[in-house]
Length: 494
Image 1 (cartoon, rainbow, N blue to C red):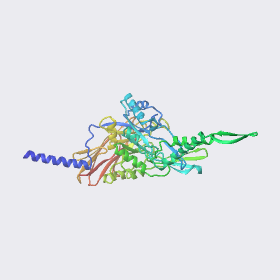
Image 2 (tube, rainbow, N blue to C red):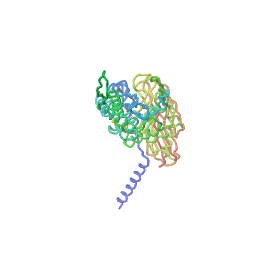
Image 3 (cartoon, rainbow, N blue to C red):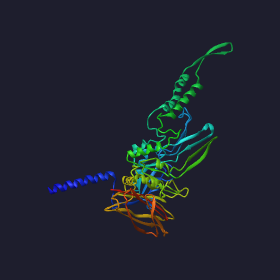
Image 4 (cartoon, rainbow, N blue to C red):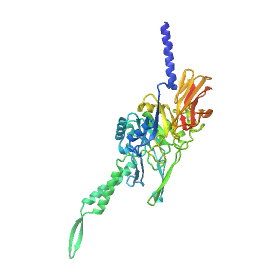
């Protein structure tokens, strides 16, 4: 009887524990996790980069980089056509991209580069332009294309899923009125062939003699056939563009892409949300300009994405205490948002232009093993921090953990604690490279700075706090030789 009662108690505890885990995951200590420095967002010569994959892995290994999260351009194509026959009048500007190369060939090249240098893990991803749109008109000799740099990075999808990404220009099936209009000029082939095959009879006077002449209408028939063939070739396969570029569709295409990747278990990263892109070019008498303003507010208006570029070679404000990122994290902590938004270090490396280098901006992952699956899993769980080097020196987050009771969590974890519980935050920061100046370590709680320390690396401290029962998160912002930005650790009431 005693054993049976004990089993009932144990079973009840297990059921309760499963229920709590279902409410909010709680992962313990970081034992068994390996620190894996990675470059996230880079291109090879498979799309718009300057170097082959083998060259990139060799450079990465020399710099101590253990992984490359490749982001070849998915479909780098901008087009415009005059209504109503847009396909027939379409003008296209296109650069090398993954769809042009072929998804299967892209993944094969990645596998070959992995085999050539297994010491550097390559994770195949794509940089996607979900939608762009035009304003102005060529008839007015002034046109502008918008949001060609509002991009999303995609990781963790297989070949079939990548081939069917729902983005502008990827004609993956479906027909509509635009299909009919695109195919309509092709019907000119019928009268064109008719005119070329039919010999028209007419009378022709030769001196005093009138003769009957049979003649085909070569010019008109040839023009009709040529227009028809061009229309059929340019309109094929007559599928409807899911997001045609002739009006502003807002964030709908971006959210659709995020949800598509999320359903299939992949990861999405908003790319360079505070960067801007603008310019203009004359195409004959027509001025064509392009403009993508910074879009940090779009992170608040979309959901279920994995992360965003928070540290890169530009001024960023999203991560400032009390800013947009803290509001996003606060929404998740309070249960008003289903996913947090993790911060990553984003490189954007194409080559050694404009002072760029391969490893200046990095994302350092905490992984269970050096595999693509483990790295994408760490990205989705927020087990990483972002870092930017300065003068060859790099800050290292040796430890960032929150402990309450018997539970300890690292970046991305959610802990449970009773009200008035004691919380212990451990911070350890080191530095590599040349001798460096002091570091300033800032601890942010719920968007507010609660402590700031300054001292030489290696730096280590423990901060104690009292949990008041309201949803709470802690994160670090470290400045010194470069900068370091951690991802948060959450505490909720048990």
